[in-house]
Image 1 (cartoon, rainbow, N blue to C red):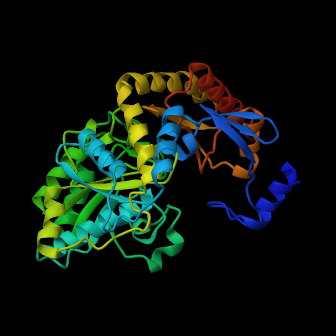
Image 2: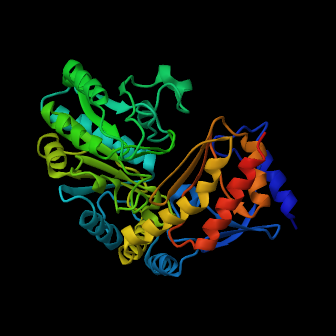
Image 3: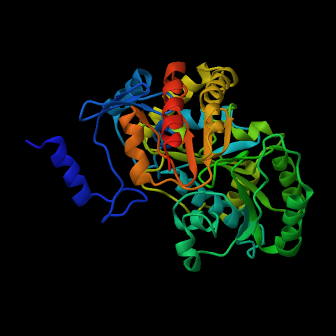
Length: 427
């Protein structure tokens, strides 16, 4: 019979974890169970989860409503191909998504993951312009400091210099990059940023299919919050130069910024929106690319078919989990519930501002960020958080929290105290 240590050793020998070296891996902790906002390790330690498992488990772990929805679907069928078949979970999920997303978005294309939903969005834009007699529109504009996924087209619109994908730059399609929006949720819009976009559009609009951006928050590119009014100006310029606007709401969607979608902080609607992560409440991998009639019918009426079709597209179990998750979400008063979470994050992270190692503390909705002056060593810092009974996974200079929405105040307090203690003891 294998012991916990046996499994840990087998993990090191056999498994290649994300963003991890096989020869010198970061520590990995064997999970036995998870409930609510707590993860229990095989050695008996219990950790308060500050990450929502990469921002997806918004209702906590092992939720009875989502469990029941999946179980019921499992008794009928777990999967059928979506080519030639359809099923109620997918239809009901599309109906819910259209109801809660901006009014102009009316068509839903399901895929396997957030990265793939971005691939789909870029392909939609290119195919749309091809069917409209503009086959030269094959490229995209995007701000630096952005992150849109790990697949090839998605990597091509991630930050080309400081992002995690610069190793592949020579193999990627070369896109057009502009400066990132200046940070500061209430900072006035700066004309020089908008002028840079306008100049790029003026020079290259005949080959630009779309502009892709993470609305309000650039997430993995630095947890940068910016003024939503930038989106209003970008929408106007996209309309002026006949360029599609794509919002990547994979991280910001489903309440994370204090509104159901981050686009609601602005006055506009994108042509294409990508969602994923929290879509299923963190239960199963599923994403969607949602678009307007202009794009969907533009492709379909002249081009016939959209050229994409994942094997596990609209998986019934994943759609059932998503249906249950969205029904739970609609029962929340998101501005109140996530607003309360923002207040707690601000209260318990703000003491970190007094530490000499800390450059900035900022919070928005269910996102709390402690930015340091220099990067942390994940090998050293991760076990320290575990020893303090919390699950926090920093990257670069950022120690941040994106906890489940159901988390309690005392749990946020413990997370904040742990971050303060670990940062204070950094050399």
